[in-house]
Structures are given as C-alpha cells and as structure tokens.
Image (tube, rainbow, N blue to C red; front, side, top):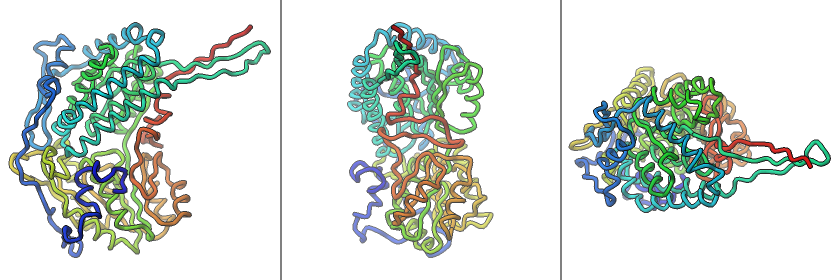
Length: 539
C-alpha cells in the first residue's frame, strides 16, 4: 500500500500481496530454499468476452471512425491483436506519409483559424479540456476494457491508467488559465518590456504501446491548453486507445483539425512529422535509438523536441531497510505492466547482509502472482506485447543463467489458460547476477528481477550510475543521512527514497543523460509548448 496507490485503487497484484492479508493466506515458496521453482499460479480461464456500454467505443466503431478521416479506400490494412489470446480485435488502414501530410495541413489550418490563440480565450480552452476530462471519466470502464484488449495489462492497471489520463487533462485545463508573462524594465528610461508566452503551433506527438492512454493525454493535454494543435501518431500495436481519445476530444468540442491522428507506417509518418516546416514541436516517448533518429530528422528545421526515452532503473536495498516494504515496492516497480515500463527496476542492488532474506521475501510473494487475460479480474499479470518482446526477455534470462546466475522463480514462457496463446512470460527472479549481464545492464521490458550483492554505499552508487540512462532510481533505507547522500549522488531525473511512486500530474517527469530531454506534467510541462516573445514598449 506504500507504492503510491491506496489499496482499494491499487493494481490487483498489489492488493493480493498487501501485508494486510492474513498470514494464513500466504504460502511459502520452496524456491526460496532451493535453486529453482516453477511459477506458482495461472488463472486457467478462457479469455472473457468484452462488453462496452458506449457503442461508439467498440473496436469496430473506432475503426470505422478512424477510417472515415481519410479517403483511402482499398488501402492495405494492419491487424491489431489481443496479446493475450492472439486474436484480431481490429484491422485498420495502413496509412503513411500522404495521410500524415493531410493531418499536418489540417492541424496547421486549425491553428490559424478555429484554434487560433488570438480568437480562442484561455477560458474557452479550459472549458473544452474540462468537457474532454468529463467524457473520459464517464466512459472510463469502456476505455479501460479497450486498453486491456490491445495492450494486455490487467483491467485494474488499465483502470488506473485511464483515471491518470483524466487527471492529466484536468491538471492542464487549469494550466490553460495560468499562462502568465512578465513585465521588465527596459534599457532606456522610458521603456518597458513585456514578455509574452505564445503557443509554438502544430505539435507532432509520437506515443508508445506500453501506456497507450496516459502517454497521449500528457502530450495532448498541455499542447491544447497552451493553444497548440496536435497530430498524434500512436503505436501500431495499440492504436485504439488513441482513436478513442481523439473521438472524445472531438465530442468535447475541439476542432477536428485541432486533434488529428495517423496510424500505420511509423517510419513514413515520423519522417513527415519531423520534416514538415508546419510542425514546430515533436514530443516522443519510446526508445533511445528512435529518439536519436527523431532528433537528427528534426535538426533541419530546428524543431523543439521533448523526449522521454529508455531507462535502466536501479533499486537499492540497504541493510537498514524495511525489507517487507521494499519487497512489495519492488514488485510494484519491477513487475507492473509485466515489467513493460520505462521506469521499471531493472537492476536490484541488495546489501550483502540482507540479500538472502530479501530474496526469500520476494520469492514468497512472487509465488502468489497469477498470469492470465487482463479482463479476468483474478489476473495479476498479463502478457508481453508481441513475440519480439518475448524473445528478448527469454534471451536475457537464458544468457544470465548460462553465465552463472541462479534462477529462483519463473524463467520461462507460459500458457496460463484455455485460448491464451499469447506472449506470456513467468515473473522471474534471478540472484547471483553479474553487472555485465544483459538483464542487469539493459532495459528488459519484461517481468525480470535481477539481484546483485553490494557491500558499501560507494559501491552501490558506482554501479547504479554506471549506465547511459538516467530516468528513474529507487532506494530503501532508514537512515536520514543516507537519504540525502544517495538522493544527491544518483544521476537520475527522478529518485524515489523509500517509495516507487515517482510520477504524478503535479511533479515533473523527465530523465537525464540518454533518457531524454525536457519534462512532462507539473507546472513545467506546459512550458514545452510555449515560446517567449519580448515586446519593447518605448514612450
């Protein structure tokens, strides 16, 4: 319950593992005393049948709504599949550069006309964002169902993500009314200088599949609040959540040209967004490799760019830590969304004095996790997004074990129930992990916890900072002195001391080093979409 969500609103697996559950409900995992165990439980249930209260938010209706935006009959389609079952849930037109150009032109026209900042007041922007937030909350159940279908995460996590997306919109609705400039003394006696903040113009928002809902609201929300227009390019793995958000934005009263969406060929659409002189800013969440490519492509037109890129988050457990609290937090940080988050704990550093006890607590808790379809409410963990993700995680674990790591829990692919032929991998615990192993040095993007022993604070900091990434880091200690020294010593944009909840609408989200540029959320988030103008008044 100390990982940032109250128990009643927490993901299913955190409620299952909550220390408030009676000890008789727990069973010890023999893996903690041996070298290996199979993963304990699966739901063994067939995929549930999804239901929608709003007929306009079904996969079929959203597909039709999206395809009506472009005149592209007879075009090739791409398939959107449920990663848990492998079943197709939608087939969308495979759009590319031509449709991206149309979307950019529409957004540019809307910025000059219907959404012109000289015509649309801050109050009007606030009102539209509040209407959008209300529609999101009213349709939250359907939106969470849609998210689970295309992404695979448990419905409890999807529900939290949708609520968080609505919170982002609500926050930036208020920010629309807080865009203040400044008045300064001029260089001359009879001169004053006004500093105005004005929208940058058309924004290209390129979003990932792991949080297909919230990654969009945290980009569209501040852009619209600032007075910009947006072209969204979602992942082809999870386009339906983005289409649903676009539909609801139009229902809320935003001009259709003001919120555009293009799905399909990532390279072609990305090249059009970065190459167009009408697009003045790119916002991207994804891999560091693609972020570097977008930076290079944007250089010719000197676009503003904000990047939220890869991570390799350390999780440090000192000898004076509350081990139960740290273990529960690590499961929340490392295994949420099947480990597919940029701020997941990839490398777990545990003090030598408490290593074995901590590993045993983790193994005990992990044995109670339950794989299955995300719409099954008993499921704690869903599948990985696709076959490539599954192959990568399996390769990391295999490499580690062959190089001497000890497999304690999990470690293999899984088929948790009838009809669930998707990309499941057992939540996995490795000990005796070396710092040069891929599972420790790289972003796993899978449900793997890799434990490495350390003996001194200096050693822990050196290992934690030995990476090109710098997004998030976590550590657990009861020492006030250590709380300060480790917080200041970690080379990361976000640090959690005795906590893994390092995100929220009121606080900045952004990384150091090759984990990104700029920030999202907080009072600083909207500044990414504004440019300053100095007006010199001489009298």
